[in-house]
Image (tube, rainbow, N blue to C red; front, side):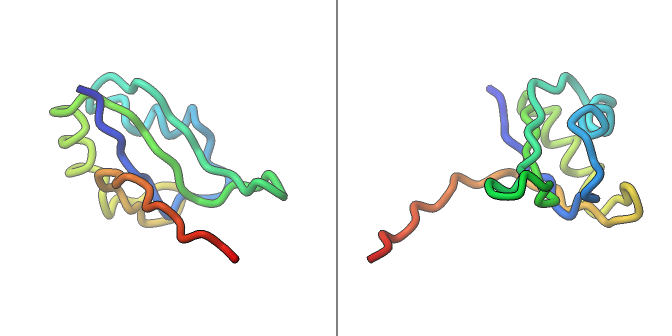
Length: 88
């Protein structure tokens, strides 16, 4: 079953291709999605990678706290988005 991995503290210049290349040695990368600001379109410095379960665990173990583009990555299992409280 595919597992979603959170990747944070990315350099603003990171591309989806670079992130795919970073995770590729640990297994088949199903998808990469970097998050950008809705209004400005600029990168927000984090994204999500989807991989099969045992490979995802190996990638998280190997890449958390590793260096990429001069920054220390935060890599962990993505948690479901918390529902936002309604705004009044």
